[in-house]
Image (cartoon, helix red, strand yellow):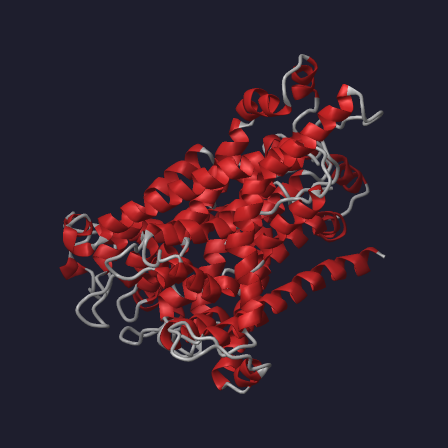
Length: 303
Length: 336
């Protein structure tokens, strides 16, 4: 295993240094032009939909259905944002539900996951690989595979249409994920860390609690963040286990925002809600991008 | 669900204790440690068994019964009747076909585009860090939101894509002196919008475009991470030998990238085959685009038929298992 994205910027320079400086021939200019056009295209491709959503969210209703499309909004309005945050839209309760569910799920998953991961990654015990692979296999099956029976369990527990149903069911995918990622994280830490503490007479649990855990904060943050994004974006369980006016989360509410008729989608409001829901995620991603890329790609580079 | 790849741990790090004479304090210590390990694992194991393992076993069991959610009839063992029913259902075959097209075409496009982006970011230019940040945006946008953004852009006739093809591109081309007027004729006439999401055959491909936009960043990041661990001196040697960049890609980069590519392919294939959200948000239960997961969910929500849903779910589960098995097998064969 090689540390991955930490070397992100350094990896290529030494290779390029060997390429001799070439003259600016027509072919080379053309080459460069195509290259930079491609890069510009990539920026437009990845960012345009979100920019377009924002532009559409500040465009008044009258100019939304215009043909040809009015690209730059001539009158700016915030009415769609006012609607989204008003009582009629049902967006704020959904935002609250989403927050409660995602935060709770992440806290439970990281707490239980860190504890299990310490045992699986740092302690030797019989049945270790059995436990590890049981938990890992849970990440492989599709959510739809347990949708029906989970529905039944949720009904029997009488938590249908509550945030508890979602917290309960989201653990299906967040917990195996945190256990697995943190196990690898703990395993990669140098072994001498707790050894000295153990020699000094500390119990293994104290070594975990007072030495390893504080040191693994970046790993906990990354794992928690990725689990949070997954929980925040979940749709199938939220759609199936809740009803309108009940414990609906934001993805479900955004998917079902509708106008007066099938052909009259309230695009301004939908775009405003989309911008609001996505903004915190984009900010988080920008702040933690190095950690996130490292967490996402941890497995791909195993030698 | 989880878009992440993690390696199987190979060796136990941490502290391994020598166990000698059972009476020494060290042996007692080892015993205490084993107890501690189980205590620390137990909560997670319990949750996983309750929330995942038990429902999974029940799914397999219910797929052989006529179980209903509303309890309107007693649950009886029906053998493979549910499977017979499904395989004779035209809508199942339709959903299977849609899912297969969505998976194969989608993953192929994601791989090609992801590779292109990874190579682009890997090459040296000003602003590569910025591009790497930019591709995280589609990844971070919730699937439901991205579906709605694209639904609006695809709208016919007032969507921005129809605006581009009917008005902007002809205008742009018209500028070109001389041949511009002739070229403009290639584009769609105003008042003749493309039915991206309403046309029965086009809609599935439009949705694939959305999925490609949303998931390619993940592919690109995995491949980029793979590129970055290829040692630079391999390329140095190739450069000295005068190998072209194109040959270097096929004979050095691609073979060395195989582990990363495989992980990315497995994750993307699994996610595509069980797709629900992006398709459901854009086309609901429409047969034009219905996937297996939507088909399964419909039997549960609209007809309360838990048995049927379970059977479809189990089929999806088996298909995904077979595909993952196939990928790993493929690589083993190549290695031999």
